Image (cartoon, rainbow, N blue to C red; front, side):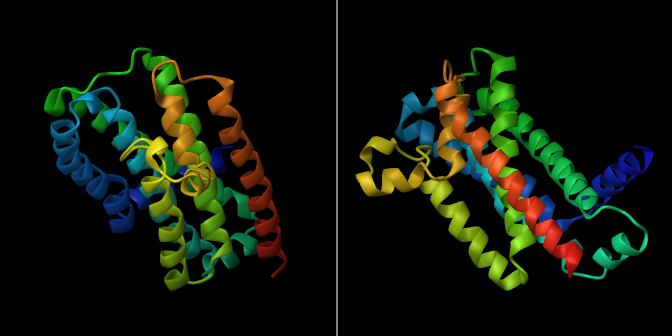
Length: 238
């Protein structure tokens, strides 16, 4: 346990110095929030009630799909993996520590948005804060688990960039945070339901924390955990 905690602390320090994580977990989401928050609330004043949820979906999606996977490739696609093997360290240890580090960074970014939104844009705070943070943590966990699959399955940074964008962009455009999903054609609305963003958005809304919005995120996490286990086994056998 002490070794795992040391690894988690070390990963946290490395991520703090990571320019990629700084951009994807803090700079871009906060700039998007500052620019689009004013636009959304000016064009659609009623969006003040859902602005926080919308901005958090964007922040989590970017950090999970674009921020986390490159860190995994740097570890599992390099000699660092051999160091794990040589010292008898389980390969899943690195995955878990990077997962937890990204989770904490994203949570910090989300808390900043939660605190700033009412001050800057008169956004409405969630009615039930503990329930809201539970929904956010579940959505974040499901999204990061998909990011883990991307980081383990894709072998090159160039392919990863394209693949991550193919997951990130539909998550944002078809999740309902930009405009109601009812305005989309049935085919695009169905595609939007494949990504966890639309489910996480509904789960974080007031009175949205229910099994109807929760089951798919739990299914995504369980499925992703199984896939990551298979991918790690393949890494170990290489």
